[in-house]
Image (tube, one colour):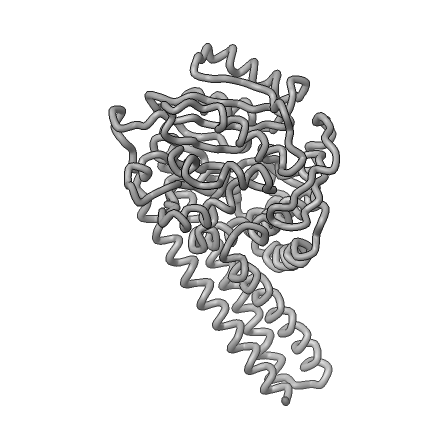
Length: 422
C-alpha cells in the first residue's frame, strides 16, 4: 500500500466518523431544542420517594437538600441514607432539615453495608426495601444535583404511560472555575450524553422508576451484587418490554470543578459501569476505539509524509485533521447552545465560558481524546477501583467485593473529584 492510498483510506474513515457523529449530535440537539416542560396535575401525582445516598460533604450538598425539600410536588418524601452518623454529610443534612422545618424527610445511617456491592447500591437497597406499599415511584438523585422546583413533576410525568418503566435526565457541566481539567470533563461529558441518549443509558443523578418495576424485576437483588445502580436499568426494562424515557428538560447543571487525576478515575468508573452492565457496551467501545485510532494513524502518517517530502499528502492530511478538530468544536458548541436553552428556561445562569474559556475548550479537544482513550483502555482491564475512599475488587458484573470498609474522611473528597453521591 502506498502512502497516498493509506492517506486516502484514513481521510475517508475520519469523514465517515465525523458525519456519523454529526448526525447523532444534530438529532440529540433537536430533541433538546424542542424540549417542552411536561408536568402533571396534583391529582395525578403518584406518591414518590426521593432517595439521596450520601458519603462525604459535597460542595453543593446544602443546595441539593434545600432544593429537594422545596419541590412543587404534593405527595413525596425524602429518604436520606448517610454512610454513618459521624460522616460530615450527616450534620449538613440534619442542619438543612432543621432549618427547613420539613416533616416529609427521614434521615438514616447505612446500617449493614454489604461487601458484595458498592456502598451506594447498599444504600439504595436499604431505602427501597423499607418503603411501604403506598409509594408508587422511586426517584434517585446525587448530591451534586441541585433540582429546580418542578424537577420531580417533570421526572415523574412520563411514567403515566403504562409502556414507560423509568425516566431519566442527564448532567451538563458549567464549572465556576474554567480550568483545563474541568474543560476536559466538560468536553467528554458533552459527547457522552449524546451516546447515553441514543444507547439508552440511564443517569442516577435524575432517575425515576416505578415501584411496580422494582417489585416485579430482580433489580433489588442485582443491586445487592453490583457496582452501580443506574446503568443496568435499561436491560431490566427491556426484559419487561418497558421503555426508558429521557426527559430533555432535566439537563441538570453541575458547577463543580475537578483536577485531572480525579477526572481520570471518575471517567474510568463511568466506562467501567457501561462495560459491566449495559448491552450496548460494544457500541460505546467501538466509538471510543475508532475516534482514537483513526486520528492517531493520521498523525503518524502525517509525520511520515513530512519526512518523505510528500507535500500533497501532507497538505491533505493536515487539512483533514484541522477539519476534524473544527467539526468537533462546532458539534460541542451546538450542544452548548442546546443546553443553555434548556437551562435558561429555568432562569438559571448560563454565561460561564467566556471568550478565553472558549479558546481553552477548543484547545482541550485533543487532550480530552487522549485522556479518554487512556481511561477507556484502563476500564477494560482494571480490577481494583477506588470510590470515595473505598476500594472494590471487580471480577465481573455480579462479582463485586468491598475490600475494606472505613468511615469517610474529609481528605478523601479530592480522591474522587468530581464529587458525586457515594
